[in-house]
Image (cartoon, rainbow, N blue to C red):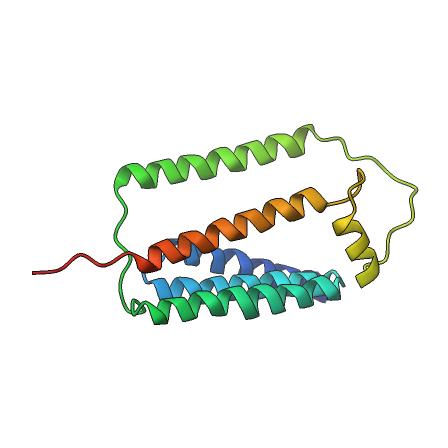
Amino acid sequence: MSGSTIIFYMLAALTLVSGALAVTTRQIFRAAIFLLFSLIGIAGLYFWMQYDFVAAVQIVVYVGGITVLIIFSIFLTQQAGDLLPRQKMGRQVFSALAAFCGFALTMLQLYQYSFKNTTAQPVLPTVSNIGDRMLSVDENGFALPFEVVSMLLLAALIGCIVIALRSKPATT
């Protein structure tokens, strides 16, 4: 086994284990820290594949921006030490069923997809090429998914504000 393979498996393990711990822990601050490590693992995979620009954007935007924003919002709402409520069994079963169905659909699509060899030259991952590809509206562009992700982030921001403004029930 080569050193490159070992590095890949270590980064993949860091990403998967941290992601699993982020969604299974009941302590919200620890979930944010595990999310941080998972995103760092993804950035490491980008560096490993020599996509330096995408890795740098991953670190600056997600690790440096989104995760720090989540941690600050946890501290500002003064819920850093609180345990998240234990979910009902019905929700746990539905979540496991949804994860299994998503995994099964992904495997089904991979099984049915026919990979084709290409003779086209690879596009260099420069800032100019990434920008042209991301914002073009032709069949090879990603302008529509870019806008959909923007709307998703806006909805998540509004949801965070609603959750932060919700008052805690009075304990007697």
